[in-house]
Length: 301
Ligand code: UTP
Image (tube, rainbow, N blue to C red):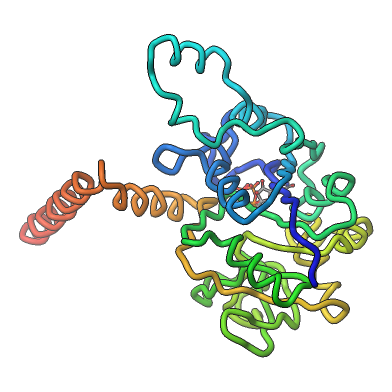
């Protein structure tokens, strides 16, 4: 039987340069999708999947993440004294020991960030969440992956089909046999040059890995973009251990990109009963106005 996945690593030390200037002093992971920061959704997804210890790999300028999961004494006392409920803060208080913060001192890449958590992960399988990949599903993405992991063990990555023109921005899977939601992984390539990708199946921000990957990362050389890549270290485990991609049954938004972030906010807001109907009316008006302007512009020509 596969060992239980009890720990999760959240690498949150990246610089978030695609979101400057917003991310100059605010961590990318604290940007909200409607009313909750991205990191909160990822933590909720982890807890739903049965994860017990949350390991955040942070860097300078990321203390807001630590504060977010701490007790906010002044805020909670003031709200309580005013007779206001604390329900909006649900899920934001993590117990000491249930969450651990380590620092990546230089942004040397995702693989290096994961390696920074090696002492806390120890010798057991662990999950990884990239919080800027926003996954919406019931059950959540990691719960679906844990359920699959309990059947086949080994290593698991969330697999997602994208338009072939997008593969050069991601880790790409060389797929083998398919069985339901599971696809055998025969190879992995990080950010392949256009036209060279082995498929249009990408690695989408969620992983369950065996601790052996930490030993491999120890000596992993820099790869694509001059960074120590997790994909390269995972590729070295293929053939020595089972390795599968899991197709997530749900919606995924790449909130590391402006378009994905805007889409996530729009989709989530539309689904909320208190603001969805008004937003729909607003969106319709906006589109009608744009169409009318286009038409007016067209008639001038
Ligand atoms: P990204 O490739 O999205 O990089 O990292 P980034 O720095 O966050 O954002 P951009 O591209 O500059 O806009 C993917 C994940 O890996 C983490 C990031 O925090 C993000 O969760 N990461 C990346 C680290 O923790 N350390 C690194 O050195 C690099």
